[in-house]
Amino acid sequence: PYLRVQGWMLSPLMGFGWGLLALACLAPARWTRDKGCRLVLLIALALLAWGLWPRLGPYRANYSHFSELLIAKLRFLNRKPLDPGLLTFNQRILWVPALHSASWALTVRLFPGLLGLWLLVAATGWRTAWRRREAIPIGWLLAGACSWLAYVFFVRFHVFVALFAALSAGAWLGSLAARPRPKIIAGWLIVLGAFTLEAAQTLRAPERWGRPNVYYQELRELTDWLRANAPSEPIVANFGLSAYVLTYAGNPIVLHPKFETPALRDRVEQYGTLLFTAPERALRDWIAAHDTELYIYALGEFFPDALPLQMRYFVNALDPPPDAPARRFEREPLAARYFHFLWGNRKYRVFRILTPAAERLAAEQAARAQERLEIGDLEAAHLLAAAALENDPGQPRAQRVLGHVLALQRAGFDPPPAADPAP
Image (tube, rainbow, N blue to C red):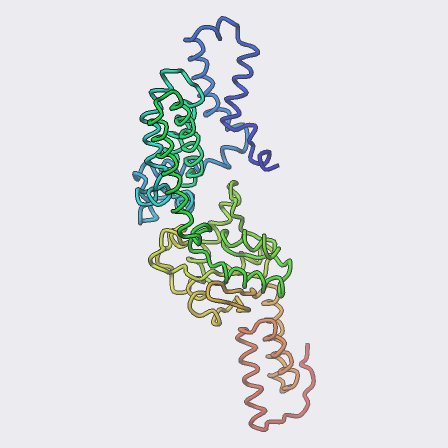
């Protein structure tokens, strides 16, 4: 179902495959036997697959943001610029772990033994495999080289680097079978030493097996609270947190971490723009429009050392205005006008929004309380103002009416019963 939604059958790779199938079935035999004709036909199929075919389905729209990111990395020589205005939203939000760029320090930390081993295998094994025309070792070496290149631009490909480096090392050991015994022993010692170094690097710090900078204890506290106090209620949270909430608390989410459709990416951009550039009420209206009342804010959006990984960088709002909702949630959550603070810990804060319906009802009750106060019906004015403040604790007219009523009652004012005002 996932591949069907993404339009995989009309992707460039499948387009090339469909073209090969059509070529095998329909092309004259003399075309496929001639090397020059085969090369021309393959180039034509590649151009068709990468140019025309993606326009026939949703694949181009769903996955164009990855090519957009690659273009940015080539333009800026694989270094993320500090000025977000130089990148588009897709480029800014995708250029993060694990699609960030590799560095020498990261490579040595990830592959302390495998890097040197693969270079040795590639340098010595390629010549042997090519001379013997061994297709499988050559394929593994090519796949390893492509994986290293992909890893330089997108660290996520480190999985394929490890896989093909291990396969290439195995093929290299096999090629030593006909060599003198000392060379075989030396080869085994080199491979075992490299993999021992890799294992030691992994086992030395088991806490790095998970994702870095993740507040696991705080996440467990959050999901425990949600299961106990807001089961099955829809949630608005940043797209990274949303996946955890959906999985471990069972709450439906609005922002999805798998945003391979333009609509989902636009939704994430709208949320970030409102959080850092719009008034508080605008963010409340956006959340309410998605039939949601609960909002979770993750602290740390203003840490200076993590700027390229923060939402304010993604939406090009490095210095949000003073009335930006993010500033209020970060520094004075109890002062929020349209967000009622419910619960929080060291990392996360849960709010319930003041819905537009509750705001309108409170305004109507406050207006009626004002009328009752003006004709001297303090008891009705008190009840209506209190009801308005239950629906909207920040309702200004209800606060004024209740203040007047309490002041009059303390002063001992006891007006005679008044009739209802004329229509």
